[in-house]
Image (cartoon, rainbow, N blue to C red; front, side, top):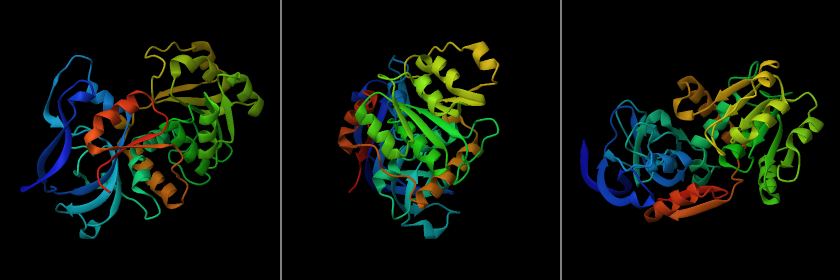
Length: 342
């Protein structure tokens, strides 16, 4: 069922640069059974948003047109059959809104499966809510793939364990630090500047190492002579030798990005002897149960006040969605948000 009302949306009907994003009016959709319609206040922009829009480099049609945006936050304004009526008016954060669907969060109203609209506490801003989905679910997956480690996080889940986060001032790195500290891990991280070191420390890192000025492996082994249990890795091609040098036996390297190159040479012997696990992580295709556990953990951490808006925020109006995509593509430090409503 479609109403005669319309609402603003950013769409693209072909892959390419930011210029393919268009602001249009589209029919306001009623949510089907099991779905909710959310009035979007903030849409969060992630690297996968611009990468999906860019495609393979050769322009290709996109039919139906795609509304980008996996993450967002807003207020439920309508529900489909089978959804509790009390959810109308609820503040929520969204995750994977555009995964295998044409309806992302970069629009006035987004229709999503009810379970992908998660209650947002009154204590958490829409800005914070719009930055949760992909970064925090990815971080949770990275922190729960280690041998003999927990499958879900909560207070005490990582007691006695040590985590190393490569790139502690990035979106996923920041999320990993906050979740690991909430779960009572000792957290070490690497950064490239004093400003980024401050961001990592504000997120809760116990030890911050500037990799441009210090020998990361040597510093980690000084702090944790037995090695760390888990590495959350953003740049595996550059850091493979460091990661194997700092891991404890049966540790894991959770790789969620390919910053620094898509080809990786593994140090086989150095990985084999201590039974190191190289775990690749893409949240979209992670097991459904793992994502459900992550959503529950992030919700609990939010309720406990353990997730804070540490990173700088960069706001763009809806009609400048292309500039927002470009900012993420240019690796701006902080979280990029599109202001859909006040």
